[in-house]
Image (cartoon, rainbow, N blue to C red; front, side):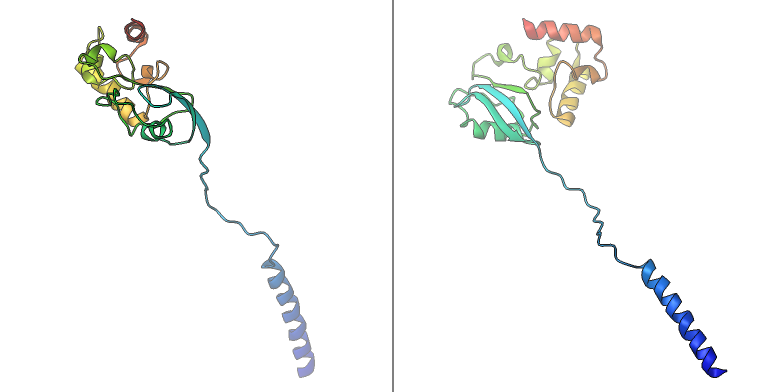
Length: 168
């Protein structure tokens, strides 16, 4: 009888072991959960007071400072007083580095170079809206006529006024 119980327990353990090992059986796949960011390539056009104006390939997340460096640097006439060198460059953007002049107000017609005072020169834009525009640009990296409408206080009518200002 003892022998039968031992044999029975041995068979039970063998069956139990088979199912346990089968349950934890390694199937050859290892799951690794990690997100790998591979920066994409993009192109940007730089003109104005740089050594070699043109279209350059950059990696996503590049800054204006990087674009200036790969374009050969600034000329002696470049005025960067009102330029945000830390601005993140978007794909397909055109950046114009202005020439130094006595009256810088006349040469600023670029949404990404304009300061609060420059925006206030546009009809119907006061200090509060101008500050919102500059804050939006600093937060989002780049202003276009397409995304400036996302700024609180800029509607279709003000957008048309801004377009007119930039064209003249």
